[in-house]
Length: 254
Image (tube, rainbow, N blue to C red; front, side, top):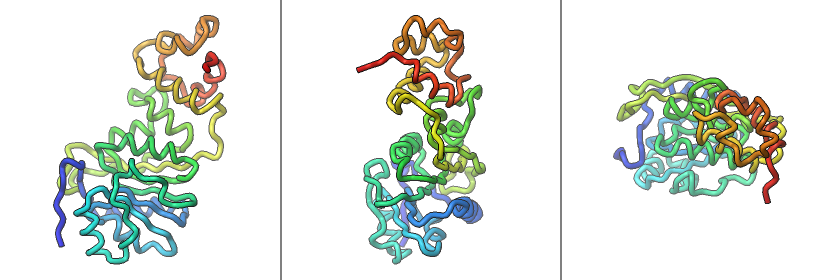
């Protein structure tokens, strides 16, 4: 049975076996029992994941043609695939689970935010993204691509940029480079007044990233607080810890 690529779903299927093996090797650095593969597509990674001993494997795949293809090619996967978008499912395991995938580029940022929502359940994620998104997730303060995604993800996960993946490793080749990153949940999250305050501050600060912090976040602090020289800076030079500490100085909101 053959499968058809669907541009509307942002499908670029991995064909390079060496890349698949590298991803699985990185995955095995942090032991797990439950594993969710997101967007298995043509099964390039899946065939290796199914061979991992003593794990509970599940997959989520929106494209029904690919579900049919996978079930006919790898009969052991029957009953383990949810035919939905990753963004529309509930956590697939009762207990903690690791996430792996060659993620659809058209929803890659949303996927990272969903992992954030599930941080109590997901200790580790190894995934391939458009290189630009992978770099944003991993970048440190002072870097021009450092932003909302960097700060929010890094507050709760350690992010490692593992390696680049060339367009020639895919069918069809995407127009951009790809990058594989690993997220490992932090044991110690920076102290913050609340997650809600932290998310609000970070999003507001980067919403007008060219302005000084004072102008960008004026509504969140008293005039007295805003006199602090810290507010002369721009959001992109503040570390994750700086943002967390700042939440304690925000105005009280009902």
